[in-house]
Amino acid sequence: MAFNQKEYYKKIKNNPEYKLRRKGYNKKYYQKHKEQIKKRVKKYSQKNKRKVKECKKKYYEKHKNTPKYKLETKEYYQEHKEKIRKCNQERRGERKIYIKKWRRKNIEHIKIYNNKNKKRQNENNKKWLKTEKGKINSKKYNIKRRALKKKAKDTLTKKELKIIQDRDKKCIYCGTNKNLSFEHIISLKKGGENSFLNGVMACISCNSSKGDKDVFEWCKSKSYKVPKIVIKNLKLMEMTG
Ligand SMILES: [Zn+2]
Image 1 (spheres, rainbow, N blue to C red):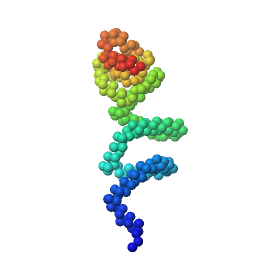
Image 2 (cartoon, helix red, strand yellow):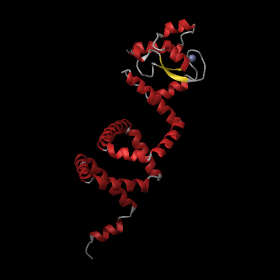
Image 3 (cartoon, rainbow, N blue to C red):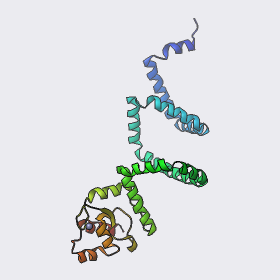
Image 4 (cartoon, rainbow, N blue to C red):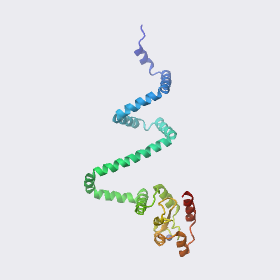
């Protein structure tokens, strides 16, 4: 009987030994032609963006709960952490720009939509503002707006704001835990920045009483001891310029 390649392949293709060997060959082939293959794949996926996306999605849906997939993605993430983070950041930036453009283009459409859904949006907003995340978000937004108004440099992140809030559970000047607000050690008007180092929590009464005054002079006038955190942060701000 003559040798039939097809028949032979059918017989052998599920043989584990053969599979392993095959895998080895493929790996070797890949290592040898890496650049070429990468180029080809890139070209193909650029040409067939939608198709590739759907395919990836299908694959993900099918495998997302298998332990192998979980382990692989975890390992991949650990290995390429920096790259992934950078890529995500870039994408977020691009998306923001895209959304901005889209909004500008569709002002009328958005107006009509908003008018239609005002009530529901308001209710959702109220609910959102009651959550932990919503609270910190709106606070950050208000502080940011104030900083922008005074043209101060703004580097404070939501995470940092939360750290400050968790650190200063009381007014750092008078010690009350009621009506706490975000206070700038060096006021924005006097050139202070909206930053982690320049931020502390103080009660509204102390905050408005201090206003744009120098923190040392104001503490003296109130016979408060200058808080340690103020001294520490002023030093750090001086060091970092
Ligand atoms: Zn106070």
